[in-house]
Image (cartoon, rainbow, N blue to C red; front, side, top):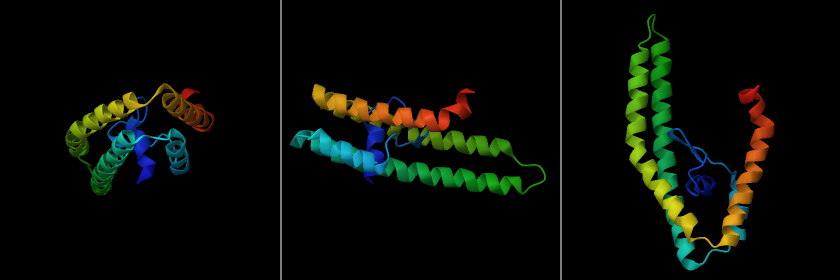
Length: 143
C-alpha cells in the first residue's frame, strides 16, 4: 500500500495518464517516510493520502484490466471494433479524473505542509529516481 503514496506527493510526473505510477519504489518510500520525520498533522495527511491512493490504484488497475480484456476479445474478431476500446478507455479515464484531481490537490496540500528541509528530502528522492529512470528508460524514448 505504501508503494503508491509517493504518487500523491506531487503532480509532476507522479501520476501518469489515468494510471497511478509510483515514482519511487516501496523501499524508497519507506526510507523517505522515515527521513521526513513528520509531525502528527503531517502524518495524518500522509496516512489519508496513502488510503486515497490505494483506492485510486485499485480502481485504475480494475479499469486497465477491463480495457485489456476488451482489447483481447476484439483482437479475436476478423474486424475488431477499435472504437469500442477507445470509448471504454475514455469512459474509464473520465471516471477516474475527479479522484485523480482530488488526489493531486490533497498531495499539494500535504507538500505545502512540509518544512523546507522536508521538501528538500522529497525533491532529492524524486531527483534520484528520475536519474535512475533516465539511465534505464530514456534511451528508448529519446533516441
